[in-house]
Amino acid sequence: MILLILFNMIVTPHFLSAQTLSTNLYQVAETVILAMGMTLVIATGGIDLSVGSVMSIAGSVAALIFVGRIFSLSGPISYIVAIVVAVLVAALCGLFNGFLVTVFRIQPIVATLILYIAGRGIAEVLVNGVVDFSNPTFQFIGSGTILGAPFQVIVMLIIALFFIWLVRGTVFGQQVVATGGNEPAARLAGIPVARVKLTVYIIIGVLAGIAGIFYISNNSSADPGGIGLGMELNAIVAVGGSSLLGGQANIPGTFVGVIFIQLLTFSLTANNISADISRVVEALLIILAVYLQTQRNAA
Image 1 (cartoon, helix red, strand yellow):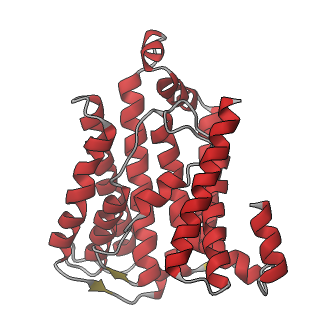
Image 2 (cartoon, one colour; image 1 turned 180 degrees about the horizontal axis):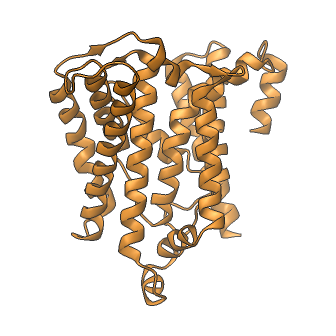
């Protein structure tokens, strides 16, 4: 991070401008929101491959309600209903994943693979094409500003701070870490392991719903094939400072991980590096970062 910042300060024009900072934060908001939930899921020893598809379902449902294809509503009430229903649907998707993991004891990577494959298809069946709309009030959610700060970034920071408190300052946060650290011992200690796991999958479902709403608001359309595409991998890669084996939930590390990836992408793009080469460089640096973390943990 420090090397990237120094590199851009020297090489990239206007890197330290408020506009550049705002743009970079704006571009990572959805990933940060998803990565907060992914951190909890990974801390329990699980993983969620379905978040991109859940984003697509939630965004599609919200858009259909907004344009009146599900309910005949208008005005502010249509925005509220669209957001609430979309988030509830996303929460149900998380509940479905958690149910498969806790009740049927299916491995998380397999359990969440079901919605990863089927979820986007469900969204495409619901929408049957692309839903376009234009409404400044609804678009404010994704692209509006408050005192010069993007509304989406403000929500992102509030969610990040909430999850820092959740992990460090609540019993539930301790239960999440204990469950992933040693599940049999956690169960013997009286921790409701199944309930903890179910809750974290519902939480990440809700966050995927919020991210899906931001996406359609940003783009003024709902394209099920594009909403949340690849976001599950971005969220997983960004979980920095937490072991994929569980037992750790480093929320600040995740936030820094997302910023690192965004800063790396920005650095390459701003200096006219082709997209193909950028992906290779990003992969190599991510490997290096993981290697350094592994060596640190081994020490």
